[in-house]
Length: 61
Image (cartoon, rainbow, N blue to C red; front, side, top):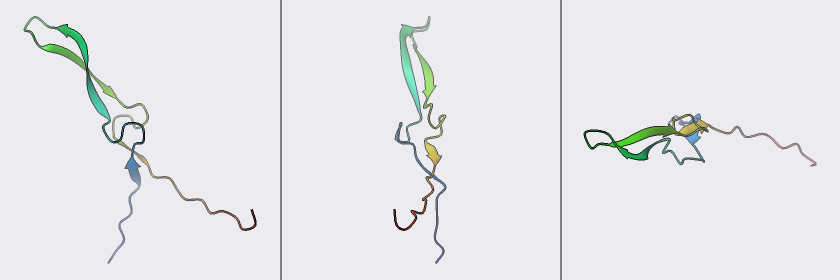
């Protein structure tokens, strides 16, 4: 059975919820709430960041 490895992990800053809609607090002429989409700066809106590579610790330290 082959092992499946992942090259990405869930972003620690946004917990995978990389894009959110933020209300501007106003409404347009039709009465719709105005919003802007904001993306997580750490993962750039993907929800994932590269997996950390394990480093070997030298013996005797």
